[in-house]
Image (cartoon, rainbow, N blue to C red; front, side, top):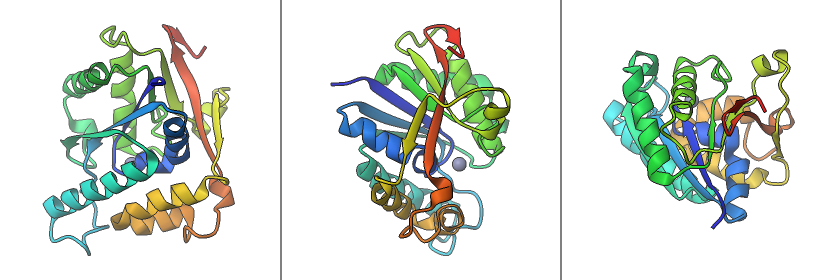
Length: 219
Ligand SMILES: [Zn+2]
């Protein structure tokens, strides 16, 4: 068994948007991949054409997530079930504690999450990034060797360079299939990735920056 990788995000589909090909590649190399999601992604009107209410939408998105996980080779998905869109209102230490528990349970060595600006400024993305950083730095996660952040424009202005860069073109069919599994999100997915048949050149790269390694920031 290779190393253990824990991806920690806010919503079902974040894992595919940022790291679908990276996850599939890790799994193909025999590494273990587990996923922690803070919310079930049940806010917003999108998806409600297929579900009667938020509860039904949450269940639907959980099912979609299982299909995507199968496609990407994720061995376990955990949902914290916090309210979608309100993650920055959750008690911070409680959220940090839940992430610590997840990391400890799976003895995660490599942690991946959003950049501190959430990549796109989404408040849930920012909140999960902050809480994940706090968990790794808590001293209670001795298994963690590395913490990676999704590469964002902010990081470029800060002078950081990606340490993981995945060209999604050769693996596009895998990523497209995982995106397709998140059926309720087809509007957002279409906006970002187009029709899922043609390769979206402008979304070519999955990129992560090594933000912390063995106690050193920005190694
Ligand atoms: Zn998201």
